[in-house]
Length: 97
Image 1 (cartoon, rainbow, N blue to C red):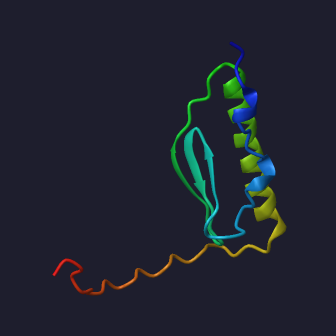
Image 2 (image 1 turned 45 degrees about the vertical axis):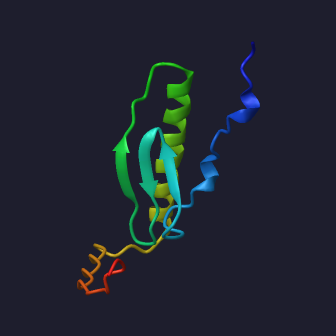
């Protein structure tokens, strides 16, 4: 039986706009790019296999990194981004009491 290719969606390289918000995430395999307005966090790992799937993932990785570099080059960058201050812990009422 032929594989139904319509059920698989290929992510668009332009769907992730670096530094545009604090919510967007781009996943490539098990590698996640978590967007932020002042930083992008990378978590996970990625195995690039020597096949068509690996090539597609490598191209999406390249497009994502190219978009990040382009966004960085377009701005007037400070020497460093200040770390966000740690929020002080606060007490909350026990929801089970």
